[in-house]
Amino acid sequence: MLKKRNFLPENFVVQKWATIEPFYKNLLERNINSVHDLRAWFRDRSELESMLSEDMAWRYIKMTCNTADEVLQNSFNDFVSNIQPSAIHYNHQLNEKCLANPFLQELEQESNFKITIRGLRKQAEIFREENIPLQTELQIKEREYGAIAGAMMINWKGEELTLQQAGNILEDKDRKNREEAYFAIQNRRYQDKDKLDNLLSELITLRHQVALNAGFKNYRDYAFAALGRFDYSPEDCFKFHEAVSQKVMPLVEKLAEERKNLMKLDTLKPWDMQADPTGLPALKVFDNSEELIEETIACFDDLDGFLGDCLRTMKKMGHLDLDSRKNKAPGGYNYPLAETGYPFIFMNATSNLRDLTTLLHEGGHAVHSVLCKDMEINTFKEPPAEVAELASMSMELITLPFWKHFFEKAEDLQRAKKEHLEDLLAVLPWIACIDKFQHWLYENPEHSISERQEAWVRIYSEFSPKSVDWSGVEHFKAYHWQKQLHLYEVPFYYIEYGFAQLGAIAVWRNCQKDLKSGLKGYLDALSLGYTKTIPEVYQTAGIQFDFSPAYIEELMQFVKSQIDA
Image (cartoon, rainbow, N blue to C red; front, top):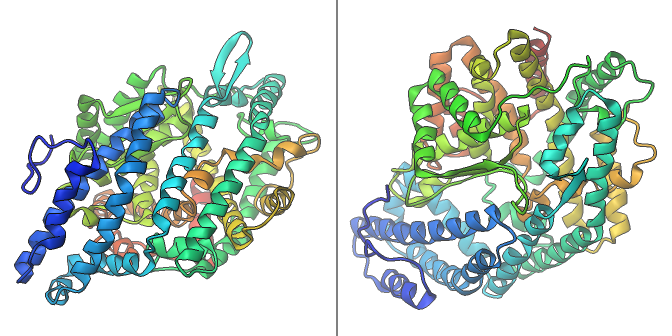
């Protein structure tokens, strides 16, 4: 399945830096005497970077599949410590070489290269040699979160469960069971609260120094530049926070009150938020991961045969690890594989509805990867997260008519759709909350841990239903943020989910009106990779890149109408 190589030997594998460096030197020393030469140079550079990217990808994938295996951890750390720093150094020199080339302007006139060259200029602008060792240290330290979280287990009635598996009990119709499970989960998290607090403090200190070295006043401003956020600013994020508070929270508050009334409770507690409010047992969506993938493929096939083929091929290649187990890192991801073309999906499935939507989500990313896999150079295949998450979040919604594969009973199907749409409303405030918290963290890099707690509780209170009673568990509330791995591993990568969720609702609305044209717009947009700006990609999908209060209110009313229906 690997693409044919033209620059590297077909049998070349990464062993040590000394075997890689000659290819970088070739690119650095090569004469470029025409726009044709420059284009060939970009292709050869892309081939080298794709090979290194995939090698690192497999090291990361294997490490997260078994966080207790020191050999796998050391393999990843070896790449980060002994290969990546030298590659970063050479990449900066390559950026400077191409930016100084007289034929660059001619190549830049080609629409596909405009975005790539814009990104290279920004990378060159913020590069600092002294940040290379700091970024290496950060990458190693960021992975500590997965090891800490992956080792968290609870004993439930004689059975050892991961926190993901234990989370299913929070859907139990028996309130006493839910409460016991909630305390078991939160007490286990609480055991490591200081370890996770100290880890975040160390990460913030290192990140702030990276920002200062690059001439920024804080890491937030550096991160916006490093993430290539050309199409919006921190001020736009603040407007999004405010719009969610104004236009989404009233709907979330209303749903919480309805839940409380349906459950006939005097007080709604944190362990009451996932159970069915009418007292029905939790939906069991599948029995095992094999069933989950087969039903998802059938669901994708009903939408478009190409979509099902993407997952079918990945299954055949062994590019799926779906089950939750001890010492597996938390969360889920779709990791693009630049040379192979077909990505790897990792998640922690336990049989609930959220596992279904997670696979649909990651499957959307996978389809995006496959659509872009044959593009000319690697940077064309690397869309920004605001576009990548549009792919995944739209897939959760446009497949809704085909969820029948997972549910024999019509009432279970309707219930599953309603639960998912209510979750969709609830996740927007959580996204705004995490993003607003991150802005505070890095605008105040010297804050104390107690100040961090106070800031979190204040921000979380703005974006959580007032009808939920936290009395007696306030100490858990103060550390509720620690479950969000993005804060540790990919700072400032979270607001994209909010922007993309709005886009996904708009894609879904288009598909409701006309499935054929709505799906075509969606796939056409994804096929652009990163050769257009974010607003242009959204426009191709037939939607707006807009997070104004009026637009958010319009979309929320559409979602509410679907819930009511």
